[in-house]
Length: 256
Ligand SMILES: NC(=O)c1ccc[n+]([C@@H]2O[C@H](COP(=O)([O-])OP(=O)(O)OC[C@H]3O[C@@H](n4cnc5c(N)ncnc54)[C@H](O)[C@@H]3O)[C@@H](O)[C@H]2O)c1
Image (cartoon, rainbow, N blue to C red; front, side):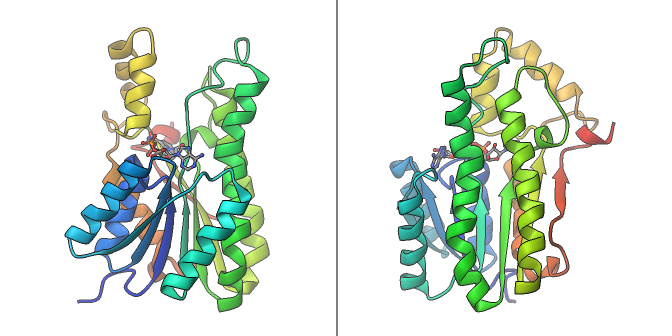
């Protein structure tokens, strides 16, 4: 039986950890050739090796998503190696830094924005031209529930993810007539190294975890597979009439 993304070539940023690693694994399992990139070279190579060991096709490339020149190289190498680029998952992101407005520094704000928002812009700038030329493509941008509803103490992260939401919609409208779909994904709190670190670094980490869980009506945090499955759906032709949409996967967090 053919996989859900059989024959497609997918580029996943931040593929060394958490949601990016799981998305890369599931895209590969459903038949895609996956190019995964990250700044964490050893971890990224290990994810690619794991995919290959499981019978999938994966290539790891080091990349800092804030580097425009590197973006051009990564897309060029993908096209040279595999002849096409069907899917871009703009997943790399950070939560650390910024902090509450009254404590935040401009430097930390700009650092977070450079990865979470500039990185998505640069990724689309680099990947959209070959997709437009081919007349097909699916771009998937990782926003967050915090791009849709506020949370005290996270102004930079929330602003970056709200920016991703509207960057996605504006680009979706521009590229819709050209055959390229652009959608955003809005996870609730998911069990990944990013969230574990945030809990660990908070003053009362167990209490903080319980408070966050209580905001999800399903009474638990999500697991990476639950986001990766949504990403496979958006990457596949099953979502062929979806563009500019917000795929919310949050255990009910934003339904309240
Ligand atoms: N985990 C959650 O609860 C959650 C919720 C909503 C949205 N998200 C978003 O999902 C995405 C993935 O989050 P995660 O939880 O898997 O985080 P994670 O920390 O486990 O993984 C993020 C990956 O991005 C990489 N990265 C960071 N900066 C980079 C850069 N400049 N260039 C290239 N790679 C870089 C890291 O090395 C890491 O491998 C992020 O955009 C995050 O904001 C996560």
